[in-house]
Length: 402
Image (cartoon, rainbow, N blue to C red; front, side):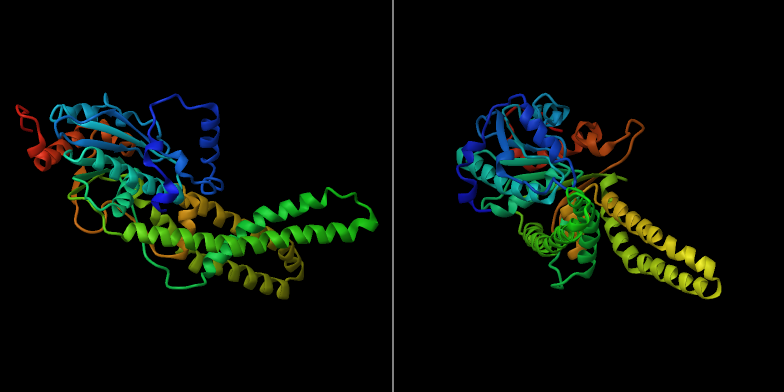
């Protein structure tokens, strides 16, 4: 997205207000997997300055993760920023808020807007180093935004970010993607066609009309899915490939990750889905066909029952496949899963290239460290020490050492 399409970045500045009922309603709609990727607008992004930097002190830019637009950890009174304020009491704090929707398009749009926010902060406070601190998928937003700026950030700290990496697709026609879309189309458009047919009276003179209207609805729906969705996937895939492989403009980066963090294995589910498609799906179909043919030849009565059961068995296999697809992509969004079926995609605990890393061990106090890492002393203390080593020249006089 170009700067012209974003417009004046200052229009994204606002003071904190209580979200309206309309805003909450749209947030709810974007939580639905099939709807979350339909609308991704820069208008869902904004930022606020909780405090301005003084005397060239650093500016911390906090970027929340998925489903957490009102993140408490990004506020000045959080454990993280109270700890950092002990070393940089004159530091500034900027909170960047995006839609927080679990969808690839929302993160790409947020990265475009955040890059302009970075540029505006660099122009407004040229003597203050800018340090981005992001949690979860907010780290992808920061990493991708840093590929769109010229002046490097002083530092970027990523808290439990599953970094999305994508490679260009090697094929122009992906059979697996097409079949998944066909299965989804059957689930959506077959009941829809039947519902449209039920709008007509059941009279002999309308049977042909009912049949052709239902067939038209079903056929147009299936054709539209096969034409529109692959192009949509390709467009988002190309944007993801460009963003994830671009040169990040950050002087230093720190990736802090928790041992055993739950999102780290989520993309393994997508690859297992691909393996299951290649191995298990066809194997089950062949098994049903072979058993059905054998039984119908030697045991006609059983063969008749197999013919009756076959549609249900096939439906059960397809249902399990679709259910697993939805489960496998829960952490990353449906569109990104379709991209993963079309091109090599992976999630890693550290971005590609050179970056410092911090592995945070579990403790007896933990129950869901991914969402609470920013409040953990095991994370805050080493992060503050790393930043102290990096930004020591910008610390006010009299500040004690870590």
